[in-house]
Image: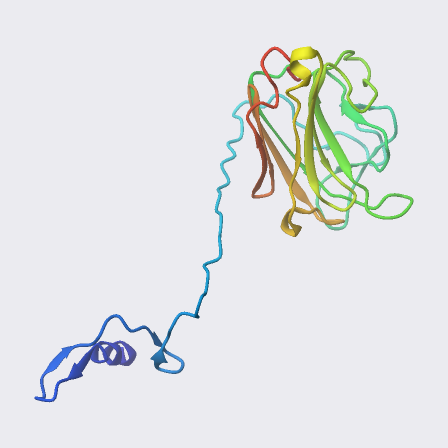
Length: 239
């Protein structure tokens, strides 16, 4: 209360005749030195950009997996692969996890019939390769040619969306499409900045929101990508 009272008193100064008038309100004071604060000469304001976390999860669960039904060391029952993977536990993160560090693929064992609007959420922990250094990782939403097996190649199926984290941690995305009209609509991009790069043995939450042709992708509380024409009408529909 003493500080407040002193502050109120400081708003006024005495005139030569003993009366009080309001102090000059245009002068900024530095509390540490009680001296006027003046802006630096020729100082240019720095630019700051702001966004928001606008992800809205879906209401009806189409597919859920926490590997709780699988024995430790087994390949998870709801998945398939052309390589190798196993269910493990960790000393840092609770629950069961599917571990894989290879150049092959894993995919859901049953074809998911996805609606026009849906969301996907999962956690990932980048780990070291068996050789040396942190492994990158990739995921794809695609229109498959053969639902019984993985379509091989860098651009499999009838087209789709690829999200990847490179070995040095940078997130990137691309789309691939087929046909004379559709092929010209393919997209790609990446997210620079140290705050977006994934680190080894750290857990990240990935959220994907698809609305017909539009796809938004989030990492933790950051929106990484927002592509309004990732799935052009008539060109590709993941499923």
